[in-house]
Image (cartoon, rainbow, N blue to C red; front, side, top):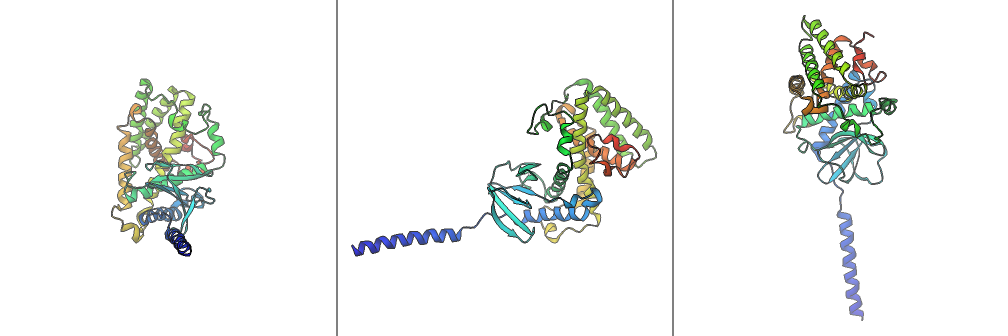
Amino acid sequence: MALRSIIRNGILLLILLSCSSYSFSYSPPLMRYQDKIRIREAILISEQYGEQIWKNLEQLPFVVLLVSDNTEFLVNHPYPSSDFQLSENDTILKTKIYFRSRRFSDKLLATFPAVKGVPCIVIGLPEKTNKSSSEWTITLLHEHFHQYQFSSKGYYQDIEGLNLSRGDSTGSWQLNYPFPYEDEKIAIQFNRFRTALQEAVLNRMNKSFNRYFKNYRKERDKLKSILKPADYNYLSFQIWQEGIARYTEYKFLTLLDDYTPSTEMKSLTDFIPFSDLRNKLFKNETGFLNKMSLSADKRVCFYSIGFAEALLLDKENEHWRQHYMTDKFFIENYFRKL
């Protein structure tokens, strides 16, 4: 009996030691080094240049939910939900990073209240979202501007005032609103409008600009006149929200000529100089104005429209951004000399 007891106790001891060894050897999943560098670079750019574009932008928490293959990492959230565990107290981002099992698509590039009602940048890895390190970093700034919009006073109440949700409380109406993309009459006038807009933007530094600008305003007014009020509200909302976010990307890039990226950022194998991105973005957005199809591209058209109209606003009323959060959704109002 003594021998059996010794054997039994020895087996139990081995099991306990094995479990103890496992528990001590366990380490939580960690965010990749290169992803920390990209996020840090976006935060540094926002802190250094954000105030020059949008007042108090840098005061907002830069909350990121990074979606990797199997894990989501939460950065800069003021009060994570209980389903998150501590990954590490990171010295690169200088904040605690939390993790949980993956719930969202790893191809997302979006901002919404994903964790405890706080607007979070929910973003997949660069290789899953088909972006270089530099493009991915600038996309973070685009999404951070959405956090700025969503956190503004009266944002959600003002959206309700547009009467576009039709009872949808999920917010999916912003993507699925039945805009008349297929209406031939509207498509014809939309093409005239976006062509006039492109001509005005490309000639905004020329002596003939006023002629192009007047034609753009005329074609814009014609488009408004044939849209139903609700449809025009939706068009205006998308231009205000998504178009100005795309413009914000470009505005950051125009300020980065005197910016020196961190050594770690420049060492990433797919780093692209920000000046190259600026030129590429302008060429792509203005070029898309000439070939977009309302029926095929749908709401994606409104990104480039807002981008281009914001450049005209910069020329016609340099103070327009001061009124962006107090006079929402109809950016044509900003052309007034205030």
